Length: 105
Image (cartoon, rainbow, N blue to C red; front, side):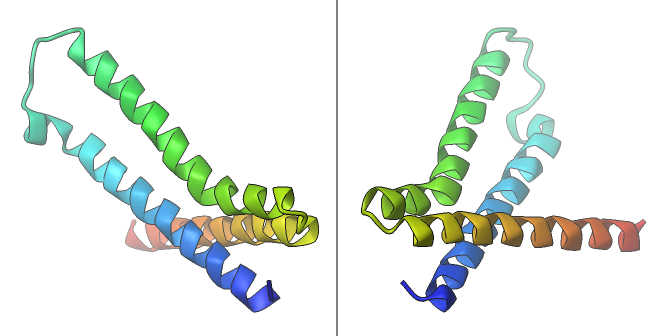
């Protein structure tokens, strides 16, 4: 796999993680408005834990899925590069998000 293709895949996966985190944060911030304020003390923790597990699954797949597949297919260098590029893209998105947050304050 070419470095440019690896970088594009890393950027795409990083954007997927960013979009997912944004959507989950919207749901969390507007949870009472969306779901109402229930007095059920068992459903809240169950939904939280299930969403936590699903988040780990989805973000783990987006970040680690293809690099692990490449590594196991014998393309170890490409797998490690893709993982590094994805981490770098996530870091850049974090910095951009922090700058936007500071500018909006």
